[in-house]
Image (cartoon, rainbow over all chains, first blue to last red; front, side, top):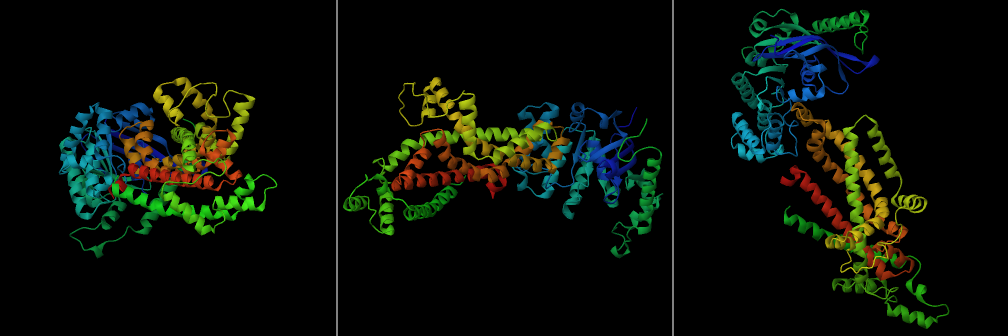
Length: 304
Length: 335
C-alpha cells in the first residue's frame, strides 16, 4: 500500500540554460492519509515551490528537472492535463496565503464555492447552493445566505479566509496544501483560523501539508515536521522529537529565533550567519557535484 | 444605477454643450469664406449682397447672432439651412438614423471581433495565433479608418467587385420605408432581401470604421487579460480543477473588461467622428456626408446643427460607457 503522497528526489529549477537557478535540490516527503506535515523554513527555502509543484501551479519559468510527485502511487508531475485537472479541487485542494487577492472580485461568493462543487460532484445549481450554505456554516460564518450573495470586497480578511477554507474542504479532498494560511491576517484572527483548519482537518481526516516559517504554529497543528533550507530537507521527524531533540543545528537555530511566550523577546537570536553560509556552501557543492556527475544545470540527466 | 447619478450627469452635459456651441459659432464666423459669396451669381450688386446678409442676420455683430441662434435653439429651432432652404432640425433628423445604424453596426462588429481576437490571443498565448492577433492589432491601429475605406473600395469594390461601394440600399429595390431606420424597420418587417441589401451596402464602410476600434479593443483586452491571468484568484481557479477556457471566460474576462471599457471608451467616439469621411467615401446618405456638403457650401446654420448633434452623441456615448463601467465593477457599484 503506497502512501497518500510521496515526493521522491524532487529537483526544480527556475529559468533555463546558463541562467537556470536550482530551487529544489532533491526533496523527499511522505504524507500518510490524515497526517499533518509542517514544511518549515525561511523565505527562499523553496517550501512554497513544493506546494505549487504538487498542485501543478508553478510559475511559467519553473521546471521540474528530476524526481516524482506520487499521489496514491501515480506521478502527478508526469500526468496529462485532463486526469490532473480531475484530481485538483476534488482530491487536492489549497488554502492560499493571501485571502484578499485569492477570491475573484467580480464573482459573488456563491459562485466561487458552487463552481468547484458542480465541476467535481456534478451537483445541480440548487444542490450546489445548498451545499455551499452548509459549508459556510461549517466554517462558522453567521448569516451564510447573506454572505453567499456578497462580493469579496464586502468581507473582512478573516471572513474571506473562512470562505477559502470552505472552498478547500468543499469536495472533501484527501490532501490540502495550506501555504502560510494565517500570515496575512490580524493576530487576533490568526488563532481562530488556525483552530478552524485544525478542527476541520481532524473531523474529515484530510491530510494537510502545512507550509510555514513559524515553528509555533507547527507545534499547534502538525504531527510531523520537515525543516527546509536552500531547497533541501535538513531534518524530518515527528513533532515531539524535533521539539525536544532537534538533530540538525539549523533546526536548533530556528528554535532560538522563534518567539515564545515563556521567553522574553530580547532572548531571541537570529540564525547565525556562519551557519547559513555553511548551508549555502553545501547547496553549491551539491550543484557542483551534480554538474560533475553529468547532470547538466538547466537540463535533465544527460543520459539515463 | 442610481437615478440621481444619471440626472447629475445629464445636467453636467448642459455647460459642455454650451461651450461647444460658443466655440463652434465663433470659429465658423472667424474663418474665411461666407455663405453669401457661395450663393450669389457673378455680377450681383453690392446692395443685393447687403440685403442677403441682412436676411440671414449675418450683418449683426457675432454676440448678437449667437444670442439669436441660442434663443431659437431654446425654442427647439435650429435655424434654416442656407444652401438647402429647409429646417436644420428636420435635415439632421432625416439623415441621423442612417449614420446611427452604420455606427452601431460598426461598433457591434468591433466589439465582437475585438473580444474574439483578445481572448483568442490569450487562449493560445505564446503560440502563433497570438502573433497573428498582435499583427492585426498593429495594422488596425496604424491605418486610419478612411484609408481602410479606400483600401476596401479598391479590393472588394473594384479589383474583386463583390460588395457595393456606394449608397445605402440597392435603388432597384422598390420599397417605401415608414421610418428613417431602414435596417431596424426591414428587420421588424421580416423582409430579409431588404436587410441583405442594406447590410451589403453597410459592410465595407462598417468594416472600415470598425477596424481601428477592433484593434484597440483587442490590444487592451489582451493586456488586461494577461494582467488578470496573473492574479491569485486565477491560481485558486486552477487549483479547483477548472479548465483553461473556463478560467479565461468566467474568471479573467469580466475582470479584464473593466480596464478595457475604460481605455477603449474614447475610441468609440472616434468611430462616430470617423463616419464623416467614411460616409463621403461610400456616398452613404448619413449626417456626415451632409456635413461635408454644408462645409463646402459654408452653410453656417447646418454646420452648427450637425456639430451640436455630434456633441450630443459624444456625450451620450461617454455616459453609456461610464454606466457600463459601473455595471461591470461591483466595487464601484456598491461604493
